[in-house]
Amino acid sequence: MIFSPPRFRSSPASALLLSFFMMTVLLLASISVSTLVLRDTVAVRSMVSGVQALYAAEGVTELGLYSVKENLPGYEPSFLDYSLNETSIASAQLSARGTVVPCEGQSEDGWGVLDPNESVQLALFAQTKEDGSFLKNTSFKVEFFVGDEEENPLFNDMTQFLTEQDVLRWKILGLYYAQTEAISEYIPLDTTNNRTSPENPSVFGPGASGTVPDGYKYAKFYDSGTPSHFYPSYSIATFLENHDYNYLVLTNIIQGAEDARIYYRLHWVPGSGVPSAELGGVVCEYTEINALADSTGIAEVRQVLQTLVREGENLPVFDFVLYHTRED
Image (tube, one colour):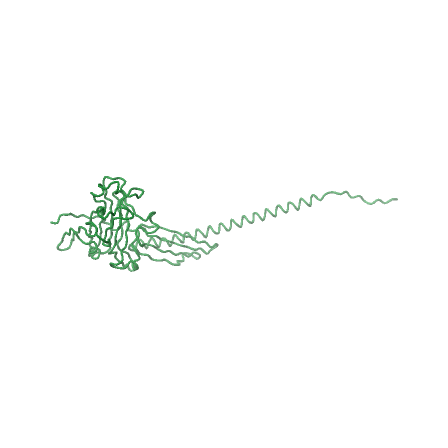
């Protein structure tokens, strides 16, 4: 009997290779899904912390808004490290004064503008302490000129027209022993000194230097005291010194020129009254509330929130004055 060894057929290891390939694909898919899930988790955690920080910033901003409502113009309190929940800390700083009005960042070209028949109200005092203490701006000046919508001076095109008529009405409202009094005047451009352009504007107010036209440093004033008396030419500086909580109101009264706008700037002038360094400048038209909040919960996130609040929109309540020009 002859013994024959078994015969083995050779076959490729396709099943093994296929299994290895499938395992590799599944492993890569698992890693990709894990990465996506991790990224989504981080994004959700950041979003949640971001919302918490935003709410914290809004909360401290509300404190700033309440401070603006309850205090006088120009007050600049700070709210530091307010813990609004277990993981969020917020702070806010109020900025209400500057070196000139319009304040930095509140005007594109550094000039305020009054459209025809429009008025603006500017505080001539500033609260400096929490107890309501304030300082008065008794030496200010206002620069102004007449221009079109693009700020081009109109005097050369309307020389006779702007020379013969008043263009600006100013008035100052103040309290004298709890009684509201006002000083007011209508004034033209200072054409005598060729002050009709942005480079050389007209200037009125107690801080104006040099020779100025009538109505630039003095105005009509009716003293309602006992006995009452009408002053055809009363000093602006004296009025400011004798009255508290003074507001300056500027009105564009140009008639017959639809595109004539008044551009203005209000300055504090050092050297009379309280130095500008102590007051910190003039009160801006808008109080800027800068809030910052950090969330250290499931993710570290910082939110910054900036809010502008217009000063004096509803103060004083009685924004008008009646007077006559007769001396008798």
